[in-house]
Amino acid sequence: MKILLVMPSGKIRSLKIGDFVMSFREAPLTMTQLAALTPPELDANISIIDESVQKLNFDNFNDVDLVGISALTGTSSRAFEIADEFKRRGKIVVLGGVHVTIFPNEAQKHADSIVVGFAETSWPELLFDFKNHKLKPRYQSPAEDSIINLPLARRDLQDNSRYAMPNTIMATRGCTNHCDFCTVPVYIKGYYKRPIEDVVAEIKTLRGKRFAFNDVSLVEDPVWTKQLLRALIPLKKKWGGLSTFIIYKDKEMMSLLQQSGCQYLLIGLESVSQIALQKIAKGFNKVNSYAEGMRVFHDHGIAIQGCFVFGFDHDTKSIFEETVEQVNRLKIDIPRFSIYTPYPGTSLYNRLEAENRILTKDFSLYDTQHVVFRPKILQPEELYSGFKWAYRETFKISSIARRTFRPAMSFPITFVGNLAYKIYVKELYRENLFESANYYSSLSSTSGYTS
Image (cartoon, rainbow, N blue to C red; front, top):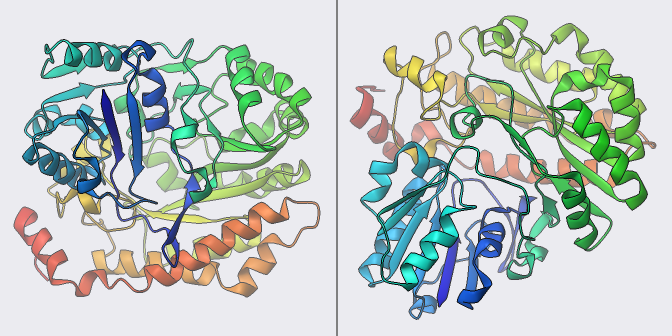
């Protein structure tokens, strides 16, 4: 049995050097984990294509028996395009992923079968059914599908030289928070943890001294997290991951993070406006504690990728300058800006849909880099230009130097991260979104919005 697994491309930019393409992001686990879930008794020959770093040539896969495609909202258009082409060529196509779970009926039109939810139990069942010519049109996993006894991801099937961080691992699934723009609570009901011994055993198989957790938040169960961190200390590896900001108040947690080799954390600060934080169900972030928290993280040798979102209902034109000033004052190591994006299924999407503020349902634009809704105060053009301006100002060489020059910090990580975003800014400014006829056509066809 020959299987092709495809991660479709979106509009996220990659670094291109000649014919070589490299992703600024960590290596994804979706397809390598799916490959690992393929029952060995099927003796499957599996290929993986990640379009963010590889070109998909359909002619190279004329001999495959089954094509599996994973779709996010922002990549769903491309996923359906790939699915349709393979079906035209007579291949059996299976679609899965977040977007398929939220819009199963739409996905069903483009596939022979779809997987709703996670694949730990449904993927093996689907493959056996396919082998026995009994493929069903839909497979659905329970929301609490187990992440215990997961097989090791098939990292050997992925070109790890094309990722800034090739070693990635999952220790938990889900999140206990309910930010209004986040799809995680829509897609994952609850918070699940792998056995610590399984996590440690998998980390030991990773090559090199560095790895990253790709969990939405590694710290939602502090007791479990501290046990994990203690188990990491003897490994003497360096790592990064995602976390909530408020852990800086937990002295034991901070000490264990440092001892276990934590070098960086991605944290959703989201806004420098406390009102905005309250409105998006993230009021546990306190703007007046940002300075103290950043000092604590830095004192423990942890660099911070601080994420901010523009376009909240209370945002005015001043929010861009205020945010950039705070980023520089707080010495946030690697800032990241996004545009408020109403992903389908979220409470934000439902609210904006009811308020008739969704400008387009061209989901290829749902990538946090494009304006797809009408802000309450700002004009769409103002939001987009302010977003770009914030990136340009923040990643000037002088700003980078002020934020990152701390000898005790993990200089290579912060340097590479800032370099990557500086390249991204150049690419961002090549796109004139609101001068694009296609963009206005997309808006007017779905919302009545005109320029």
